[in-house]
Image (cartoon, rainbow, N blue to C red; front, top):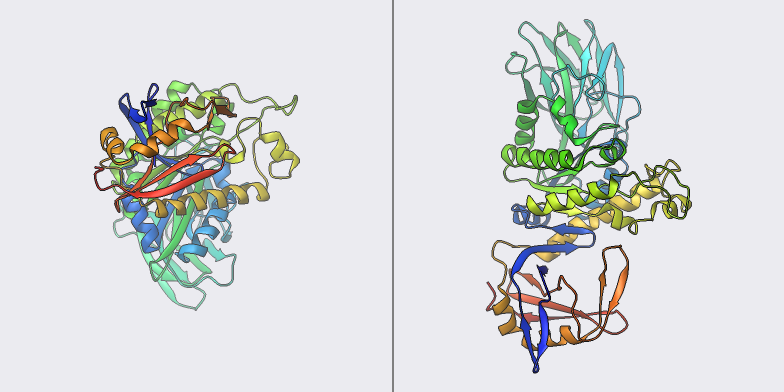
Amino acid sequence: MKYLYNQQCLKSVASMAVLCSALVSTSTQAGYLQNFNEPNSVQLVNALQNKNLHIVQLGDSHTAGDSLTEAMRTSLQQQLGNGGMGWAMPMYFSGQRMARFGYDHHAFQPISSRNNHQENYTLGGLIAKPLQQGSTLTLKAKRGDEVEQNIRLSLRQAQGDGKFIARDATGKVFNIEAPSKNNTWQLVQFKAKLPVTIQAQNVTQSAIGGWWAFNAKNTGATVSALGINGAELSHLNRWNSQAWKNELAQINPQLVILAYGTNEAYNNVSPEKVRSVLTQRIQQIRSASPQTAIMILSAPEALKSINGQCGVRPTQLTTIQQVQKQVAQSQNTLYWDWQQAMGGQCSMKSWINQGKASKDGVHFTVKGYTQLGQDLAQDILALNSLKLNMSEPPTMQSWVNSNMQQAQDVAMLPTKHTDGTGQDRQQPIGQTPTPVELPHFNPNGLARICTEDEQGQQQCQTTPAKNMY
């Protein structure tokens, strides 16, 4: 647990450790993941402990390729069990990929909010429309070991529309139609073993917005990747606001990840707009699904040119990354530092040389996305071991009373910290940087105090924290 204080907060005074200044914010860190007092942290940890976790990631091409999310999905399912295949786009869209779903179709039209801004979209911003009587669409599993899925089909039908006739891999035949044919988006639930094929019967005004697939046992981890190439977070304005919020509320995931920023940086979107849109989206998600935790995935290191030692970054990238972190702090969300996971600023060329990033300086190879997805999954899993409960952080005085000697020890040891450039620098003995790292706490009444020795090796010890509140 990391408690951040302003000014110089830890001093050695006549063999006593005195803490000064005011508590300004609290955060918990696991790897590259920071928790800025996300109000649904406890619910998220409970989901990890109960092995029943659904993550929905909204994003741009980094999400639309479903490589990072597939690595995260695989890692989480290895630890928590397979909760299902997750979200599938309504049909195949050129340039986009689903790691676990495949498609066949006859006479269905794909429509994307990327280039068609006039349609009525729900969560995901993609729809499939039948063009004629008898149009068919097949959803397939790329892996042969997928079990029967509980499927929720996002469907919109108008008055007078007929139905879809469905057949799954077992030969089961059933009808699919919206409960109310009033041109609103609704979820229709059924069980099916993929592949499942639907055939249009007088449904020329109908549209499909996506498929949600979960295992019948309703346990394990599920990761749903909802991405669109070239997307900015502001593009959600092209979706039917009431529709996507209603769908999110019904799906009710434990975690929503917002993975944007790259296109905003390349398109020179103003930091003020990035801040406003990101804040609004977080508030919309909170309103729609109050029990869902939110994570901001920062924009990764990216280059407009690979010339020079580090390459040339988009002009707005650094500012947008800063805004994303500031919004995470002000809106109390989780925050995963993608750039730091790469090694910090000036890391993209190294990733290109190692075969982990594309030569375009923007995208990553499967090798790179896999490493990132695995790192993200491990940081999420680490939240479980931290047993977060940040509703009432300990006061400075209670920490002094319980840990006087440890505070003095911290003050007198050399400490490494970041100087703002992404580089570690050594702190002279007897001086303390700001912010100060204070103990790691958990709700079981223990404080884990960590310091570094002269070789930079971390030393930790656990002590009772009964007086902390």
